[in-house]
Length: 533
Image (cartoon, rainbow, N blue to C red):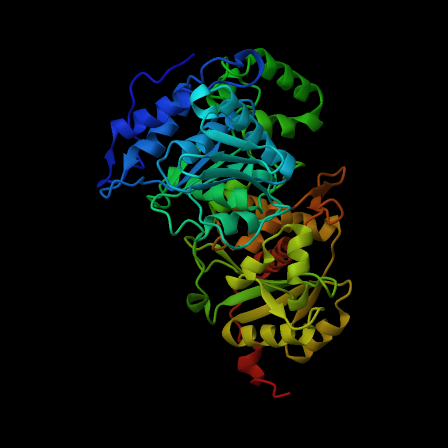
């Protein structure tokens, strides 16, 4: 067993916080008085591995000047078979039985009752194996509740399938496998305000990487990354991520060791090697190996756009500074019940400038809640943040979008609008009637391949600026590519099961911007004034 030789407090410890050795020692001693419950370790004392002890000392030992814990959220992301469930169960029992809180409410949360029961069963077995606890604890197996009688505190299992929205007075929450949450509702109920009446509530989130980059888990993962890389600051949030980066060799044993802190203890290197060999022979298993064994966020199929490179182009885009500038539009009309995308691309004015992207998205107001539930996509949040606009009713109101584009034409010098010729006849006529130059854009290899390749080139060279628009990011992440024998490529709408309309609109607008550049002739509005309809 690898033990922590010398404890060094986390760099996320605030300047005015102190490390209380006695508080940390107490938490470690409580956990190490418990026993392992499964496999070859069953019945043996729960001796914390070095990385586990580091987390426990940081979370329970670092105190604010008022004597309460500095961190109220701990996010631990780690591959499978590292001892997650055991650690989560031990923390749940510590919060319930050992934290000195009267009538503490501690909840174990997971996607479904079965998943939530995993940590509960481990915790219940730990109680049964510990004489001191078993005398003081009542286990209600039918309702999945553990009651600590001296303080009347309890640990209760909840799942995303069934929970009440009111009445929680939370002292602790243990979220197991956060990446499996079907939506953010349970997470929001448990973490937003439910612990306000407590002095030091703790939200202990422990998970493996997922594949849905549009989930509450990925959102929390991004926050943890931002903190680890110094882009954000939150003294209440404690981030731990063990895993391999996207550019690391997933077949390299050194990478396995880096990503799996319990390698050789809870999981043998031979098991990981066997899984790797299997993935090499069967490419379909590669993503599963990388996600579960190396803790990488991977899509279920190979992505075209390297999102780290796309994110590096999140340079700010200011509408005010772009006013009057030459730009080109790309319009991808959805079915009437889906997302419609309109994207403006501004060509660079000099060598130092970038292609600037200004996207707009619409969907019917009445469909949002249904689509959130169906697609597990946070359209409602994007609407609140004004990244996604809505039109009244249950179908897209094209007249509203035409008016919106007309208003954009007053602010920017829109030279051309490229559109997918399928299904856009009426709107195209209306836009022409408003004075816009509207050009049809073929969706085959001939027309789509050059700008699609150019989009990738500009992204890799960081010659794009898109302001980090989350809807456009999501769509870029959804792109699958189709290629022909000559090496031409285009977005594959059939394979791209999620929406890519914004990406297609960007590609079309980019094509026109590259071809036509900064043509400085007057805008249509300067020539004819505004049409009064």
